[in-house]
Structures are given as C-alpha cells and as structure tokens.
Length: 110
Length: 112
Image (tube, rainbow over all chains, first blue to last red; front, side, top):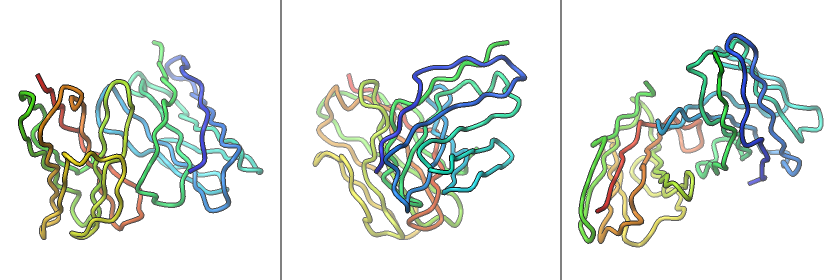
C-alpha cells in the first residue's frame, strides 16, 4: 500500500472548518483514499473515501488533487466531539489490511 | 453505534492464561477483521474471515487463532498470554470481503 504523510497534530476553533491534509505521492491508479478517525481509544470510525473525484457525505468532504498525490479532509463546522486522531489510508478498494499510520491528532478548541 | 458488538469490554488475566474474545458483526456483513492496538505499535491487522473462511492474514502470532462460525460471529483466541499482549483488540466487519470496514468498540485486554 502507498505510504501517507500527515501532520502529527492540529488545532481548530470550534465552529470553524477543520482542514486535515494528507500527502500520498506514491499512490497507484487503483488505490483509494480512506479516512477514519478514532476518538480516545474507541473503535475507529469510517468517515469517507474516494478515488479521484471530490466526495461529500453527512460527516465530511474529501478533496483530492488532480494528480491524486494529496488530499484534504474537511469537517465543515467542527465541534468538540470531533476531537480525535484522524487516519488517512491509501489502499485498493476494500483492502482488508488497512494500514493505520500515526494519524493527525485534531483538537477542537472551544 | 457501528452495529459491531464485541465482548467482553474489559478483560484482566494472568500470564500464561488463555482468553477468548467475541465479535458479532453488523447484520448482513459476511466479513470480519481483527486488529490489535497497543501503545507502541498502533493499529495492526491480525486476520480476516469471510463467510466462515480465512481470507487474509496479517501480523498474527502463532499463539493467537481465530474462527468465524456459521452464524457469522467470530472469536479470537489468545493463548500463553504474555505481558506484551496487553492491548485493545478491535473487530470490524463489512458486507463483502472488500468493503468499507466498521469497527466495534474493542476489548481491552490486560495481562498481569
């Protein structure tokens, strides 16, 4: 699986948009970008995934650059409950061996 | 609530013992995955079952084994436990063998 690079930590003010970057410059053509988050030792929670088009669901938006070498997860109106570790994972669709790196620890500040 | 149920939530046992962790997947999901999360290793994929058959294997120790039953629930058996086996063990499920995975809340195993 392609390797991803994420900032170790980020802060965001409550109510503002949280933009979490991910670099995946070695991504292959058949690999998707997945985002999961883990809130304080709870089970990881699936957020969103995409191949090359931008995606949006009720939780977040995923913006993938045209060359697919990087992406940004956007939480449009961050709340305190969005404080978590966010993992960007690149893998073929539904790859069972999801490789979780160290992720970005996002802290939402009141 | 992801719909994946893991029991027990917490388990404390002594070195050398054997334990069984249980996972009930979401209704309709055929695939079950097991992950281990320890402080110094992050989330590690252990093994996957699809409709009762082993589908993929990761960094699972020989002392560990798993199975998926006809009703699709799965059990992870850990034997000859060592202090280093203390970790969170997560189960995840998906509809098919290559779907987006939904995780349970985990079993926290402490080996003393």
